Length: 280
Image 1 (cartoon, helix red, strand yellow):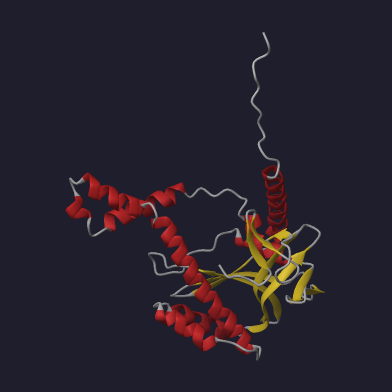
Image 2 (cartoon, helix red, strand yellow; image 1 turned 180 degrees about the horizontal axis):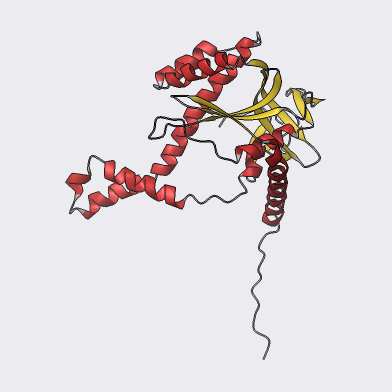
């Protein structure tokens, strides 16, 4: 996960301040969305079992409980290791996408360094596919890594890219995706629609995070909302359908209330009190 200057990690999840090193005031868009429960038990179990099966030491450990326990202990972290590795890869791909946009806007950039970082990790194909998509769709970037704020509901976040494509202003969220068994980029999670809906509801954008200055939201409220799956074999842009946006926005709003309720409850201390027996 990238780290915008105004974002801070807190006990209540990632939160945003109005200026650099300021007091965190509102939750991030991703923190709000994370309030929705996700059942990962099946996937975690699958990753652990796969790690055991693929362990080269397994054949030599059969019949040796101590060695088998060592493999099992290591396998329990397989899901977390995979998640962390995917997050680091996602950061590298996002960094490349950001710097291609900065270069196209004539701003200081590290596009060459970002591509080299991908190549060093055998991920150069992500850059190749991104470049092909960028040229094919004739992307004209307007802003990259845009930090936004909504005071009415109380949240903030960072949009990957605002760009003009085919004469339409688009709000874009990039998602780095692995490859499925058919050689295609894995599909986007529908939760990206909540992320995009929250983004387009922004009221302000950060102009100078050091000084803490903000401007009114300058882009059209009817901008096209795109979730873009960045894979090694292809890039797949998906548009959030306009008729679903009100429902996804309501869900985001409700999850924002859940976040606030959880924070309030956490600050109340012990909710239960032991009751002694009545006096004889």
